[in-house]
Length: 111
Image 1: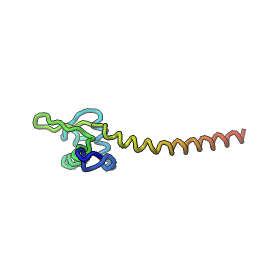
Image 2: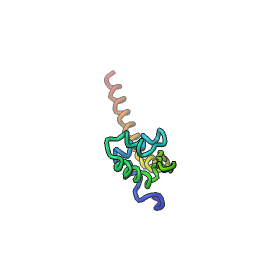
Image 3: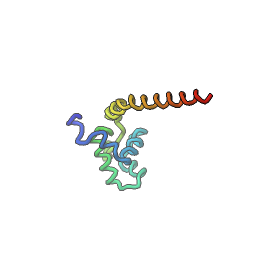
Image 4: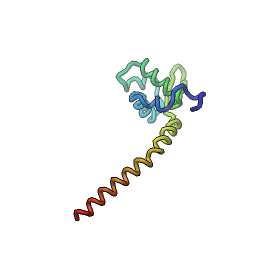
């Protein structure tokens, strides 16, 4: 993990359900903290803390617009997560193939 990017990693950042919801919300459009806070049952301060962690991880881009700070999703760091999950797809595919073979084999016996 690049040290200039973050003190937290992508896996820590997405571990929290609120941060996952924030990422979904910010995938649609750039928003201010005030606008974002209206979508959550937590304080604006709590939302800001989540956004700060996401920013430190590089998952959101921050832009100043006058006196307002605006946030938007930066999906590039999610590539690390995708690569990690992709490694395990081989095991899932093998299990699904074995299940398919078992199910199709059993159905042939009863016809």
